[in-house]
Image 1 (cartoon, rainbow, N blue to C red):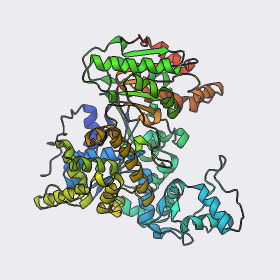
Image 2: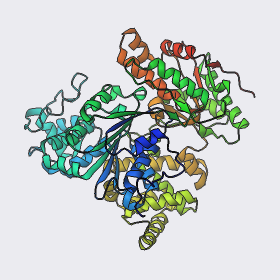
Image 3: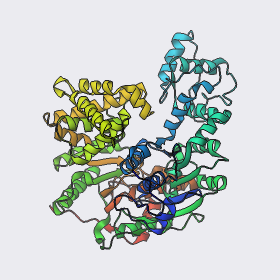
Image 4: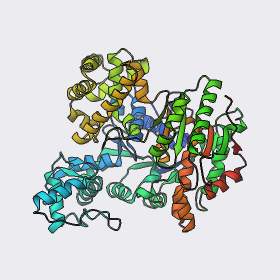
Length: 617
């Protein structure tokens, strides 16, 4: 591709540049913080910014762009969008990763910089720690001595030395030796090791500084102190250009360590300029009015005054916002399932997967209570929060795994089910796996040969697990690990087992019809049930906020009773995140008790919530 000048550059895919978007995308001198609320297209804005910086050579070869996200699916989604908008020689200089993956990469790459007493190598596994292993190790290796060594509420980091440079002794040394012997550490330990490496080695910091010209920080409101300190340690006193994107009203990870003061810290440390992004592309005008009302009610006095604007000219129906109480969970579920059927009947463009049931907590319990009722009303309900296999991964997490996406594409290829868009995605994926340039004819032919061979390994007559294992062996686990740092042997095995189990269930459910199995596996024609935290970043035509009573919002109730302002803010933010997933309809239902008082006051004062009418049957 010929280099584009900054003046002549245009965004891809009919992306309309407003004055605010131009200010964000074209900024190359100042660090900026984009306050991007729900539905404002922050991921696409970051992708277009990367597109601009790479194509106009504001980020010149060999310099790169580093994008750090909180969740794997966010990092993967952003990387995909950049790959679709840039040629390979440009997009390969865009590194999109989670913080955890960046820590892992740092530890594996610079493991030789760790203290001598740490006997780790580059093959170290990072995973949630299995304390049963430690108990068993103590029994078998330490002559029955038992140490009260598990992390406690008071000291959750007991297993991490205060100063990694000092050699520990006693039980602490035994613990680290155990980890080294098993080549296994947990994520907190990995974070500590990565910070030790970069804080004690100027050569590592200089390498990162010279490698990255631009830094994107997605979901910035969820950034923890340790994550922020890691970034600050590397890039302080450098010419890095930082773009942070987040929304204080969507800060719902304080329980996991997110720092409520993170925007203020960055403003002081990196002199960031704040740019509000307020055009909501997702919701209709009435839902946006409700979003604005909730935003004003839950925002603090020191927050930025934002008013979100929609992009639609049509007037939304009054009954797109509603609430209703029921005398039991069965009646609630029956109403919702009939309502969904009615809406699908009225609008033929809608399918079951356009609807979501969002719940504050305990999705599994609610699913068990209502599944039969949905079945009776001929609707399939899927609990996205369900673990597929014991000690495995959850359905929603599996579907965002890059390996899952690749395997589905290869299955489609094997059974001649690829459409044009899917073929392009498979070509891009194969290009990354092989390191070949899709835009060079000779390389393109090799990529097609690779795809043909790999997809030919899929033969379900020999068993799904055998086919998937053959594909992974052909690709080579080390190749996957090189592209996606989460694919350590243990995690790769979890993904493979979970994929095979879920796909096999769908395959058998539809009598070995591969096309129907793929749709079922992917959640097509299934109503989604998910927690608020899992709904973040997603959107649906219609959202039912279910089981919406005081007992499920007990944390908010306790926060109000205990005058815990910070916890109140986080709970109200969770409410804001859930409601802002809706495009056309937003309904609140409860099956017992009272509405959460603080939230009920907000809903009532909006004068926009109507009583839901019974569906026409």
